[in-house]
Length: 131
Image (cartoon, rainbow, N blue to C red; front, side):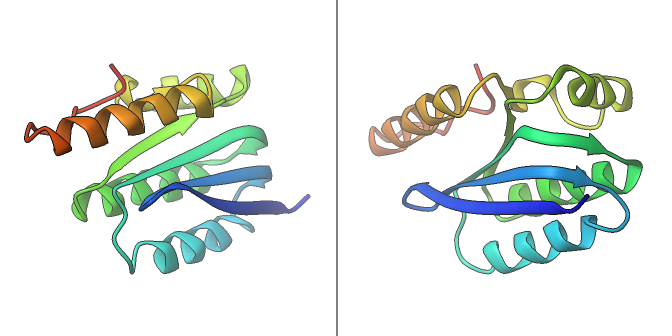
């Protein structure tokens, strides 16, 4: 099976990549290329929606981790949402991404996006995670 990636700009510079299919050795470069193109421009936040991701391999985990590091290096916030239990278990075992980067839904991530923007507009620092 292949990997399908769709992108949506939920708010200005706040992006959602929706993944469907398998994120493995064969498809990981596809995600890596999409993220590389995306982060050439300013990205305040990126959420990976994994509701339709059926499988993730160690190579897939590596690309997700690299994505997190690349987004954070540019000053953005990285989040993951809608993981299936079997995918979430892989992340829990690997312990590569902080727990406060996981959201149960895209709506929850959107509320977090709103909180970030409101905090920045009021002159305060952006929240550090999905609290």
